Length: 158
Image (cartoon, rainbow, N blue to C red):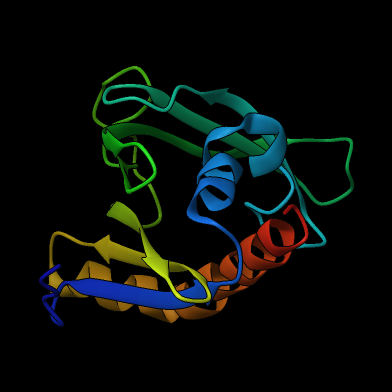
């Protein structure tokens, strides 16, 4: 996958679990809720229709009772066990998103690795300022945290 350092942010990790386990963690709402938002905050999956054009809507809670909107996005491409692409620039109703903190398209890829699954995230941005803003907001810390949570969850789900 070609990266443009002016526009893209990336993260890569080997998850010591089979690709199918990592895929299920992404595509099963009850599993996604367990790792998608940095702890101790909690996630609730409102809609997860993992297909091109499908909705990806989550809420978050800091206390486990009051939930607020977190993500309202749509899937652009889904290649089973290999790739998930979603954007928050278009919401789940296929309308241009109201202002979002950072408009992006995220590509998640899964490949076989001798130790499990090679997991990659690329967040693509429309301009260098948006990319820089996303990095400043904590892309590496935030996505790194949820990737570590995904790894812990998947590695314990064998």
